[in-house]
Length: 254
Image 1 (cartoon, rainbow, N blue to C red):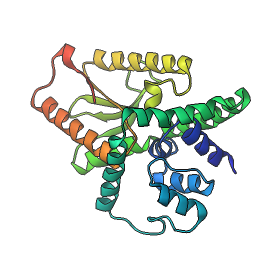
Image 2: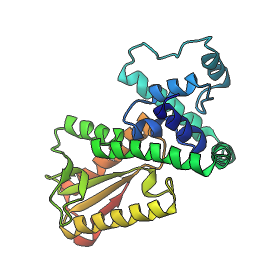
Image 3: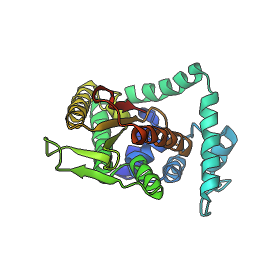
Image 4: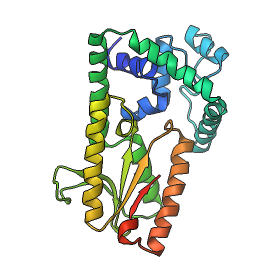
């Protein structure tokens, strides 16, 4: 098992990340993550028991492996997977999270540090190149003929800060916040640092007379979730275009 595969297993089993969240952090696709998990005999939370067992023992091929899938089919699959999770009771969701936490707690401190370091490297790489969600929004907004500046930098008072997406015609900055911006994924200390940095960036943007839109990824990164968020964003942008918000009404969260 190489370091990347070890990190994927850690994030999925110990930290309870979904295949979509792992794929987003590593700038790849969920199917690739699922294949690696299947390779190492890990049961997938979002598949039926029969299908998981067949994949694990090699009695069946992955239903999408080696096949070209239309965007419409992908969206239907995503909708179905989202409905499965939505159908779970809070008790069932908590139980799944508990299993991951218990497995993580059994690791030695040395193992935890090593796993987290590997995962953080993957997240930093995603931050540098842009997450899957950021690229999705960039593409969809561009398809609608909106001018978008990606990872705009060297324009705020703090030259080290950049903005994920900037729409000059709307005078609006968009930040896509993954779970580590509001959950102690890497510990409470790192969470507090992220919150402080986010507050500083928000203050600089609002202080420049611009609109600040923060998209908080509170769910697994499915096609359904991304498209629903896109529609919310487009609706908000239409309102901003019709009437630019007053000074104290320029901060939005989606």
